[in-house]
Amino acid sequence: MVDSILKPIAEWVISVISSMGYPGIVLLMAIESACIPLPSEIIMPFSGYLVYTGRFDLHAASLAGALGCAVGSAAAYWVGIWGGRPFLEKYGRYVLIRRKDLDAADRFFERWGMWAVFIARLLPIIRTFISLPAGISRMPFIPFLVLSFVGSVPWCYLLAYVGKVLGENWQSIRNYFHGADMVVGIALVVGFAFWLWHHLKPEPVETGAGK
Image 1 (cartoon, rainbow, N blue to C red):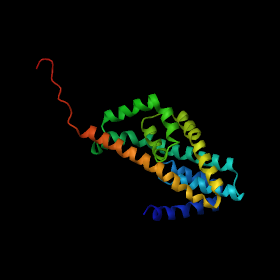
Image 2 (cartoon, rainbow, N blue to C red):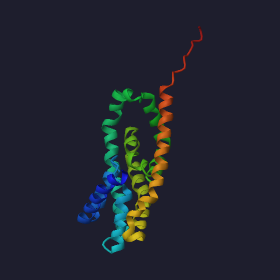
Image 3 (cartoon, rainbow, N blue to C red):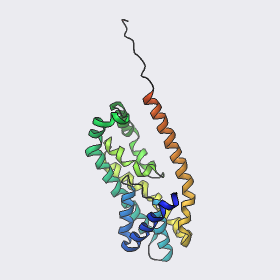
Image 4 (cartoon, one colour):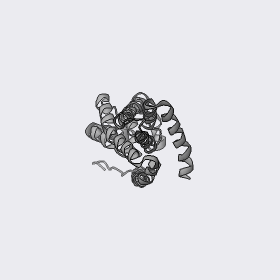
């Protein structure tokens, strides 16, 4: 099932990079970082394979990937800035998002935002979606953009290097990252289940001092 979905995506990725070169890497990684789950585990390893063939340079391909991440992250961030908070304040209650949840997210990004953005760029799945909540919470843009780029550099280098080492077997890298995706996915499901339980449990009844 998963392979049947990934096959046409992989073919499209290969086509874009093969025809556009480095700008194709920038474009695809921008899409991947703009809350659209286009697998970087296909984009960068194929770029690494082209390093193996001699068409690409490892450093240029990796930096093109990190640049694309920064571009896509900026787009998702500004969507969060312009429409995210007002939209959630108006309609969030229908999906159990309350104003105090938004305030809690603001406090989280105020305290941990820089580390959260940097570490998220190194994690499968989470890296794709971190930019939108950072924008909704109005994390300062320049630090956000710098950390999005810097955090993406080792990720892009790693995937491109592995693709170079694997050569014509570059697609086998998906087998190694599938386990990591599963672990992160399970952690997110558990976290969501806890969040849902916390929101659905009855609020404690407060009694006044004079009662």
